Image (tube, rainbow, N blue to C red; front, side, top):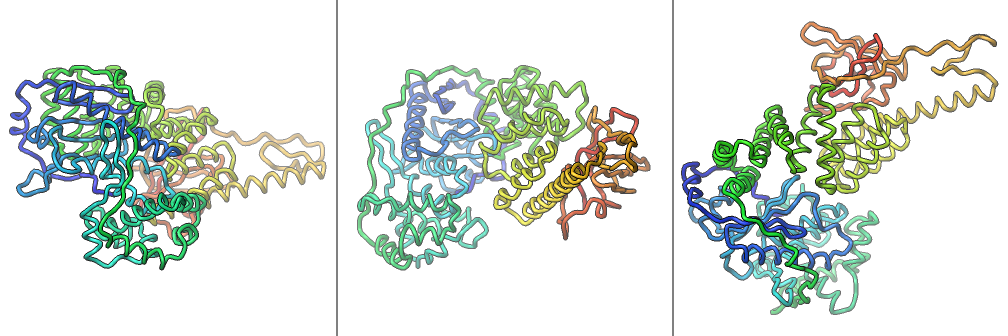
Length: 618
């Protein structure tokens, strides 16, 4: 994947302000799937919108089974000339003798920005845009190996979209020369490359891995067309069925030695075929909506891009000016919240987003961030309604943004209410981001709260392959053991009750058997009911006592002792921070003396507080 321009250094804020002090006419054009913001004229902005809609339509035809519209919007900044472009581009490209960019694609978890010049020149000035757009479309194809993902991005980066036709797969002179001057990787090695491989370096675009991935993709696609075969589709189907990359290649492409020889001959040939297709005819530019932007509105868009582009000082200079001229500018407050969030100032960020929400922000991100950040602290009963309302508003404003569903599910789960709705919310999040491990684990946690131990364990077991680090693997395996223990305890309890019923004995509500026939069942011990508010406290766990599945313990912090209780410690979500457990966690043994952050709720009764979650510290 190409490096995502998360680069450091800043321009002089004085020079930046001077560059934007002159009056300019900015326009925003909204098409069905893109937002174009430009300091060119409306005609140019509409043409850019038309180009991007046609590009999307081309990819929709190429990948009919993929969800090609991301959960986050794609905002295109179409800048009229080099001077204004350089005021926004990554700071590392501002030095002398640096590569001059014509466009870039900036992808983040919650936004997608394209920065492009209207006066760009060259054979393929927007290749980086098409390259990263391909990655964006393929981001949910978690079955796809790295070589194919990069090969397709390289294949489509030289796409040319004209009024009546589209050229696809034009050869890359750079890649061809590199392959002719270097020895190709063995295909079995190429197929096995992942993000940890020494052959893969995001910062080294000119590597043999990228070039060979492009060549093999190009070779197979051309051969499929010439031979009327569908080997690439067969390969993809085998991968979806969890067949390993090498075996799938042997079954779909045949003998790998012959394929290697064919590929080596292919890169030495003098000419290469590429495809032409009719331009999309389903784009109706009469539906595009144009709007002139005021200076503060245009500045707010640019400031937001600068903030996401790691030019925080320049963004802050512009935001201060906007808020001085327009104190109620909602967009500026949202970006100030993002800057505070990036700097780790969570309470400040929450306040900025909260102000935006109170000003009736129509940004799904402002509502999401305010709600999600509120979950990381103590939410008073008076604030709970506002937090829940913000999360529901985020979903309504953008039903395709998975994190909002996950946050609402967490909100409901932490309060142990509406668990079926929480489960459905988390299921939506998983469907939108199937590769997200934390969503799967949160879904399992909700199932544990619903006393569905076996289902929770099954969810975690199916998600283990999504772990991307040893720490994530250890966390998931520990949670799996926890869920399996709970499921086993459930099964034993059920077997015991069935056995006692078969024997004709009475079983009390807490699972015990009366001592003698005719005795009245003893009432179960009082089980605390969470009533809120929810709190966090950091301290040391002491006096841990288990009477499975119940557990009582104390949290000692600054000389104060807080009594905690859970009726079923199998259902508690445990996590670890900055260290790895050497073995599976046994709460009844391993919690004693441990530093921890505990989430708890006040009890409706006069008993200990109800422990909600425990995060163990080193």
